[in-house]
Image (cartoon, rainbow, N blue to C red; front, side):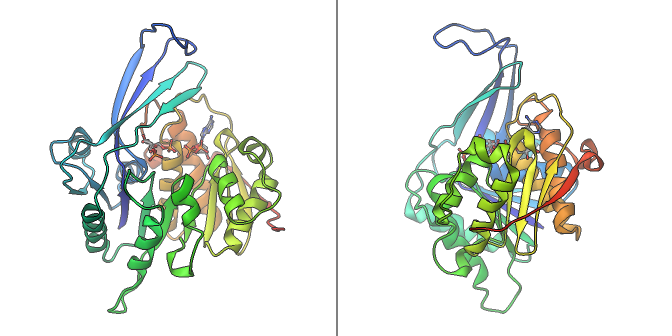
Length: 330
Ligand SMILES: Nc1ncnc2c1ncn2[C@@H]1O[C@H](COP(=O)(O)OP(=O)(O)O)[C@@H](O)[C@H]1O
Ligand SMILES: O=P(O)(O)OC[C@H]1O[C@](O)(COP(=O)(O)O)[C@@H](O)[C@@H]1O
C-alpha cells in the first residue's frame, strides 16, 4: 500500500478562459472543473485510477467538500477533523495551455493538531511500501515537519521494515529535507525545475541555474540533481514540464522525453508523474521503468482538463524515449 500525507489539501477549481487572461477585465469562463486536490491527494487519486492500494491521510471534517469529493471518487482516506474549512485553490487555463495558479495559505494547524496528524499517519502507515509527504505546509507548521515525520516513520522499535519515503514540496519544507542526519532524508524527492533550482542551491551546488535553464538543459539539471543526491537523498525525480523528466540516483542519471502533446491543463501533472513512478516501483520496475512511467503519466495528465488524473491505460509509456546522462556533480 502507498500512503500519502497532504497537510494542506485544497478544493481545486480550474476555470477555463476563452482566450488569454486579461488583467482588470471581466471574462466569461468557458467551463469550470472542481476536484479534491493537494499533492498527496492527487497522487492517491491517480493510484486509485490505476487500481492500486492507497490511503490519503489529511486534515478536514467529513462534511468538507474535499473529503466528500474523495468519498464520491472512491479514494480511501483517513482524516483528522480540525474544526476549520480547508482551502480552495484556483487555476486559470488559457487555450494555448498557459496556466495561472493561485494557492491559498490554508487553515492554521495547532501543535496538538500537528501531533495528532502525525499520529494518524504513523498508525495508518504500518506495512506500507511507500509514504508520500506532499505539498506546502499550512500556517503554524514548522518547515522541518516532513523531516520529523521521516525520522519517526523510520524509528520502528519492533524491527519491522519502515516504508520508503517520497517528498514533493517547495520552499522551506523542501530545503529542510536536506538538513540533518540520514534518517530525516527521503528516498525520493520530486521537484519540478523551479524546485530543483532551489534544492540545488540548498545542497551547495555553486553553478546554480534558473528553472528555465534547467528545463532547457537536462544535463545541467542532472548535475544539479546529483548534488542533491550527494547530500544524502536516495533519488531525485526532477520533472521538467514539456521537456519530460530526469531521474538521478547513486547509480546513474537518465532523461525521459515524451512526444509533444496538446497541453490542456498541467495542474496535477507533477503529482501524476510521481504516481506513475510509484506505480512502476511497486511493480518491481527498474529505475528506467519508473522514470518512463512517470513521464507517461505526466504527459497524459497534462493533456486532460482540470486536475484530472490519468489511469495507466490512458498513458503511453512505449512512446517515452530514455537517454542516459552524465551525472557528475561539481
Ligand atoms: N506542456 C507539457 N507538455 C507535455 N508534458 C507535460 C507538460 N507539462 C507537464 N508535462 C508532464 O508532466 C510532468 C510534470 O510537469 P511539471 O510541470 O514539471 O511538474 P509540476 O506539475 O510539479 O510543476 C512532466 O515531467 C511532463 O511529463
Ligand atoms: O500545496 P501547494 O504547494 O500549495 O500545492 C497545492 C496544489 O498543487 C496541486 O497538488 C497540483 O500540483 P502539481 O501541478 O504540481 O502536480 C493542486 O492539486 C493543489 O491545488
